[in-house]
Amino acid sequence: MTRHIFIGMIKLKLILESLFDSGYCFEFAIAMKQLFNYKLGVVVGVYKDEDGNEGDTFEVPGHVFVIHPKNKSLGIDCRGIRPISTIVKQTMFEGTPLKTTWRVDSEENIENLFGMDAKSEAVKQAKKHIQQQLKSYTI
Image (cartoon, rainbow, N blue to C red; front, side, top):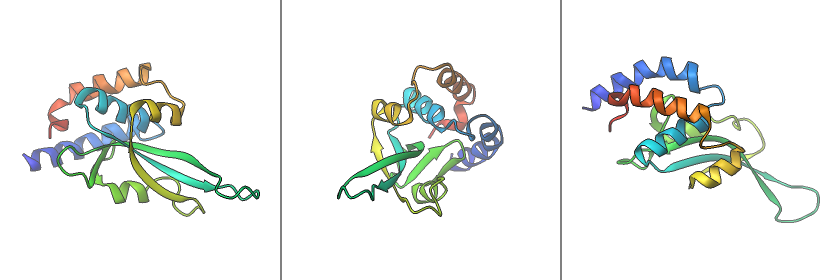
């Protein structure tokens, strides 16, 4: 079973990277959440406001993924099943002064963070694609 998932994820990597790897992490993760009820994880960069107001911080969303239902140290995004530590390291904040962190979050909050609609046509398309490739996503 594990080998099947791994091979399936390799095949999907090529397809999904072209579809959902260029700014479509939100749609992919929301589709996975809606289809399988996986918990959502979000990577954020934490920006400290240096204008004199101590304690002011702002979060900048960088990436959203789902958490593996059996191994909480793994995340699933359009690149496949990977350690969450790798997902965090590969988020766009690497090499910036922002502190990068991640957390489990709700669909509603992630929708607000990214300014996206969980009922969008892109989410529907992601769900359709995932359903067509269901064996590759079965864990």
